[in-house]
Length: 419
Ligand SMILES: [Zn+2]
Image (cartoon, rainbow, N blue to C red; front, top):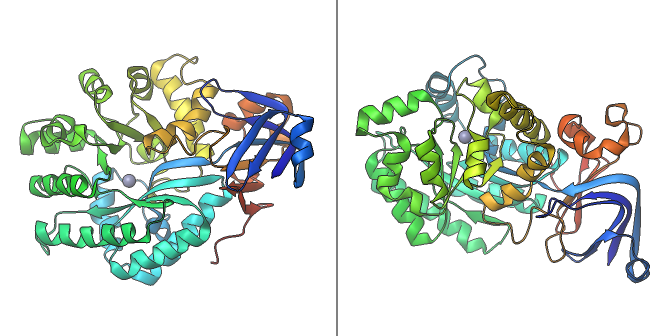
């Protein structure tokens, strides 16, 4: 058993327990004690690690990203979503080679680990060769990943061909039998997939018994396109297809009215909120406070670095908090506890992983990050730790990261990715 002592622990558990001068005990991959210092726990320690007043919190959960797009950072600023996608992103992605993709994924893994992210929900359209290389990179990194092969309607492929190709990727992922690398089905969006492909994607998710992952209600323009094409807004259209009765992660959820939020509360859908991407592409501000009040799980996400332009979850959580205060005109909304939970346990709920990760509790996996505030002038005075973790911390402040009890970042250096 390893015991981390002299630490201030933000558990992000249900009651938001915080232990000052506490200890965290880990046996194998699991947490076996978290709380105030206890002599009997210290006595059992095979290894004592004194973190000298550092802060510990759960590893961050990025609910929606596109790691393979890391090579597109900075490719195009100052465009709205549809122009950005059609004129810059999709043509660039069409040029990707398996080597470029693997390199980009490794860079994304490095950036995520360095900034305290331990679990991510990825969306990309790979072929057979790439998925093996991507899996190798993720496995070596030790990160937990939901990998969602993306489906588009295209003139070059029939729906049956797209589904067959995607099914092959999912079967490959299933063949790994790795609980840290699982699949979702990701039809890209209601506007880029035909009705037939959306229906076939849901069938595939049902057959494979895995969740769906899709961009939904991202912009007003999307609502206009879907209304014109099907006579319904995006949520009602997907509801008609059966998407709201299947476990799903909807990325964005910016364009949602009161009735739609009510419907979501009664569905199996969770929202991945991407505040900076939504700002940068001028998509809008998601009604996160209303979604949370209605009981819809909302996790935080970065989207890709092509619309962000980094994978810094702390920055994302801070932006989410600031936006909800501004949107509601009420500074008491989205308080620091809510922000810290949105980065961790709520993200775990969005991915259906809250029994294993997302909070520091006995029996859960030991996924955590360590920040030493000493010597960091922007994290003083140290006693306001919770505030700093939302409003002052930078991703580069993360000193150490552990996944399943194993150290993956030491003194800011990633140990598990070879670039
Ligand atoms: Zn996205």
